[in-house]
Each structure stands twice: as structure tokens, then as C-alpha cells.
Length: 196
Image (tube, rainbow, N blue to C red; front, side, top):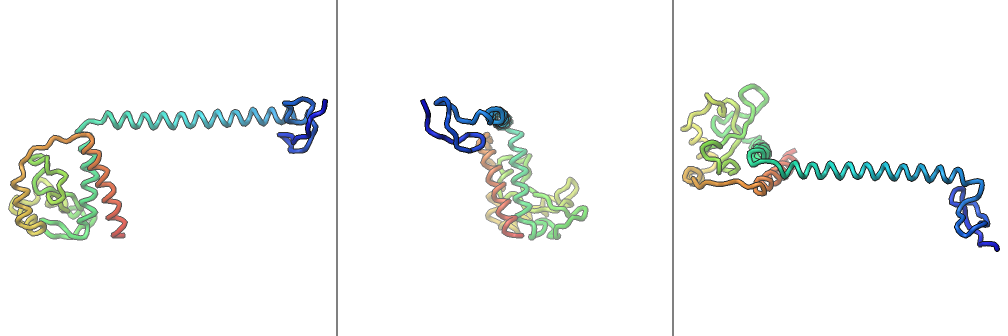
């Protein structure tokens, strides 16, 4: 019994198979089995890489789920402060008015009008935080009356009075802090794109 001519899977030449399942010449069998073994090794290596990548991703998700509220607050605060520094980088210190530079004492900080310790619920409030030089933000820096005058000049009396009157306690949640972090990361990127 003869079978229809077919192409060799290895060398691509036409041949007449001796069996119905034959896909290579007799001469190409060794080369074809070596090629198939190499292909199988590549596929196994790729599967191992994908499994390792998936495992790393699940590990990252598990670690993110285990983060505590203080850790998330710290991470969100970093993003928020970066946004404030990007927003106010050309405005100068809100207390003394000096321009920001890399010189000691003139490095820009994100200074809070009402401190994060005294008013933790206002730590991510954009009107409560402004660009402030290192000298004014330090422990022996600006006095409360100077901070008040600078804040009123920057945001207005009504907004300042609203900040001073806001004493509602706030309990931060995981989702809320992750959303704040993501929001201020994206806003910072947009600001830096616009101003460069």
C-alpha cells in the first residue's frame, strides 16, 4: 500500500511515507528528534520562567495585603509630599518667601500649616500643606504667627479659618490610603510633564 506524498517536517523536502503517521525522512529522524528535544527544553524553560514570574506577582500582592496602616500612611505621605513639592516649586517658601535651591537651609519641604501630629486628619489636605524651606520647617524655624501669616497670604483668611476649625477625627482605611497614594503619584507625574 502506498501513501500520499507529504513534506518532511525536518528538511521540508517531499517524500512518500512508509507508514501513515510518518512525518520525516528516515535520514532526518535523528536531527528531528534532537530538534524536538531542544524545543521541549525551551518550552519547559519558558513555562518555568512564567511560573516564577507568576509566583513573584502573587508574593507582591500578598506583601501589599499585609501592609499595616502606618506603613500605608508613610507611603501615601511620600507621594503627597512629592506632589506638594512639584506644585509649589516655583512659588517659594510660604513663610519667608525665599526661592528654593539646593543650598543648605533653602531645600524645599512640604510644610503643614497644622502639623500632622496635632491634626492627622488634615495630613493629606492640599490647603494645609505648602512648599516651605528647610529653615522655616525645622524645629527652630518659623514661629506659629509667621506660619499663620504666610498661610493666610497663600490660601486666604476663609480657607485658613476652615482649616483651624476642622477637628473631625478620621480613621484611615487601607483602600483609602492606597487610593491617595495612586492619586498623588499620577498628579505628580502630570505636573512634572507640564512644567518641563
